[in-house]
Image 1 (cartoon, rainbow, N blue to C red):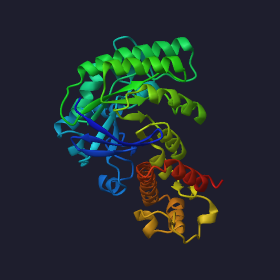
Image 2 (cartoon, rainbow, N blue to C red; image 1 turned 135 degrees about the vertical axis):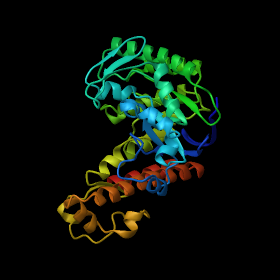
Image 3 (tube, rainbow, N blue to C red; image 1 turned 30 degrees about the vertical axis):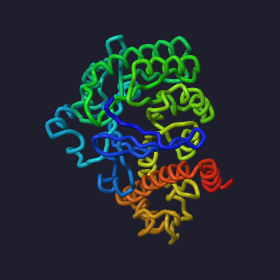
Image 4 (cartoon, rainbow, N blue to C red; image 1 turned 45 degrees about the horizontal axis):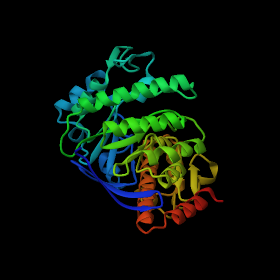
Length: 370
């Protein structure tokens, strides 16, 4: 195992750690901005760095289409290609194959699908192929290929997909080329079924990974069901390895997951919201299309020190949005990413000072105004 993770402190189940990679350290709990096709939408890598992000997420599905992976490899890998010298994690593409492709067929060997991008061209991805592509991209954290099913699903279907994912996990691990500062994460599956989740965690632990992801959640289930799944899944994963909850989420989701022992997160929410006039603030979510902000000369969030909040008023941001100016999306996205990184920094500090619960309660009270 070539990624080094050190658990520095615990405050009840909340964990403070540090993950060392070939492209720098990641302080955990950490939030990864999503750079699906080698770009965080509307942001330069320099702008993303200003928010405090130490790691980005790229997507193997999108980066393999139209010969992109070969091009990126020729250009020296994803870090050099996109001018990002910090860590990168690449999703294996399993979720996108299931959700974006017009047609897919899953077999023991892998998955055949039609691309949504290049005229319905057929592709066939095996666990080995997914790992190979991620190696071409030079991502620091490789994710094993898994099958993501749509919920709700029957116990029979959930069991089949989980067991197939575990066999693919073993093949993914065997195909991974171990090197210093790089690693591979396994992904637990099993839907909302406790028995299947624990079986999945046990099988992945037996195979042995640098970290363990919790997949197949944040797909529309109620928050309390996601939290209940984390309650029994996190303790079943190795304590000395990072735990990554995929595709999560809102600030309140993140706080609840940290409380249950999760270390890493990713979500398109802060960037997508920034492109649709929505801002995350210490006082809750804000929609800049609302008429009340048209002449509001106060900063977006008086408690935020990001470039947007230091320099621009709500009135100006609302003007940019009503005018369909790209700058509006850029400034709101930058603020949202900064807000998320500031939240993570506050979480880490509160764990170090052993007052995470107080931090969480105070944040929620202000954020929800309750």
